[in-house]
Length: 346
Ligand SMILES: Cc1ncc(COP(=O)(O)O)c(C=O)c1O
Image (tube, rainbow, N blue to C red; front, side, top):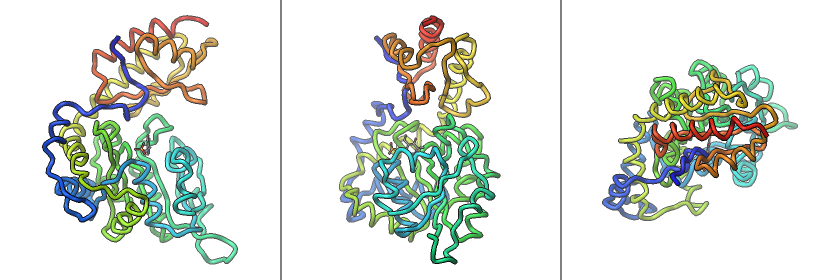
């Protein structure tokens, strides 16, 4: 049975062409700065993001955590959004690796405001309190079904951060999905942040890796901490080559995934047992719930038996994510299976 894999865009597998690029990669020892493919990737991504320097890291988690470690001191406060990945889904790394405290703001679709920031910023002018060092934003916002930050909102947050001497980090695991959704360039977003990490291994289809980009001093610090965490890689050019291939071939095709997400969402909206808000489909993620007593976990099991994999979350919401490895025909198949499985009454 052919599987339609909609659980996550991390499930993409390197294509034969990407594997060829990996096999042919020029390599050297990256801990000596001598891997030409890694150097090329870091330079190309930094240039695309409008930053001075880039660092190839093992994962989105490592990129985020190095950004925090490099821009804070132990005991500092970090402002982040309540449902962000960096706080909720990175194995407690903020406390463990950076020793920071987190001030969580409840955003609207992940977006918070300067007024909310002002309420929690600690300026270091009272010995009783910590000191805020960094603000983190997530674009697109995973838990808000891949919502892209409006640039004006980002600009206001950045302005507020700068006027309070705070750094801004963007978890841009899916920044290029934000670009595909809005038609804006990556730099339109990244001009408002000091550091940004982007994932190569999600919608861009590389098997491994992310790039953290920022000013040279911060990236030098991040390189040092990456080594400390055992993330100093050697002939990592075979992986960087996949990243370079992904940049060249797979960024421009992301709108196709968004189109697939919209088509699937529209078909789901026609089903009586499905509750879905089409206004909340922003990029490559669909969140929906079930009505009439249908159990989401059971439904996901039944979909899986028919070859369509989706994710039921603790909240009872079901998530489907489109990506490079899901074709238009597979979306047709997913729609057909959803019609069959989700129209049953428990
Ligand atoms: C918004 C966001 N940031 C960061 C990450 C972490 O990426 P990785 O799984 O490569 O560590 C993810 C992973 O899904 C994510 O969705």
